[in-house]
Amino acid sequence: MSSTIVLITGANSGIGFATAKVIACASEVFHVIIASRSLEKAKSAMSEIEAAGIKGHLSTLQLDVTDERSIEQAVALVTQKFGRLDVLVNNAGVGSREPDVKSRFQRCMDTNVIGPVLVSAAFRPLLLKSQKPYSIYVSSVMGSMAKSSDPNSPTYRGMPNGEAYRASKAALNMVALQESIVFSSTALKVFAVCPGFVRSNLRGPSEEARSGWGKAGDPQVSGETILSVIQGERDADVGRFVHADGVYPW
Image (cartoon, rainbow, N blue to C red; front, side, top):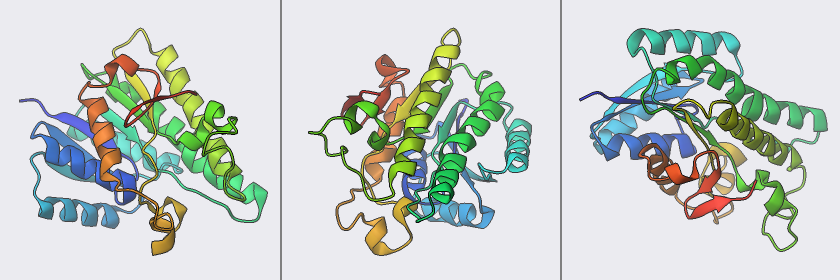
C-alpha cells in the first residue's frame, strides 16, 4: 500500500502537534513529516506521539518558514526520500501584540503570509506529482472580512494591538483563494481551515496564554477537521474557508 505523505509546518506543538498525532493515529496509510524550526523539538514531538501509540508513520524535518535556505534544504530532503508530497499543511504561525507597530506587522506577515507563500511555491512541484494533492492553510476566523465587519460577530472587536495577526490571516486567506483559482485545472485541492479557538503557543508561552485564559478548547478538534479534509470528506468545499462545522465567508 502506497503511503500518503503529509508535511505539517510548525508541528512540534499546539495545533500542528495535535494534527500530526490525529493523522498518524488515524490510519497506517499516513506518513506524517513533523516539520519544525528546531529539529530537536521535532524529534521530541515525534517521540511523544509514538509513545501514545500510532497506526501510521512519522519522521522529522528541520524547516524554518522564514528562511529560504531552510525551505530549499527541506524540499531537497523530501524529494530525495519520497519523490512527491500528497498533503502540505501550512500551519506554522505567530501572534504578536508588541507595542511597536512595524515590528508586530513585520513578524506576523513574515511568518503567517510570506512564509506559507514560499513554502507552497517550493513544495508545489512535489504536490503536483501526487494523484490526490491537498494544500491546506491554517487560518483563523479573525481573518474573515465578513465576520470582522459584522457588529454582531464575536470577532468584530479584537484585542489591543491584534490587528497585525488579523491582517496576516486575511492575507493568508487570499493566498489560499488565489492558489485554488490558479491551479483549478490540476488535481490540487486547496483549503483555508480555521482550527477554532484552541490551546496553542500562538498567544504566548505562559499557561494563561496557552489556555486562552481558560477558554481555549482541545486542539485535537483542529486535527480532526484537517484530517476530514485530507480524507476527502470536505471536497465539496474545495477552494473555501472551512471550519469544523461548516464554511466561513471570506
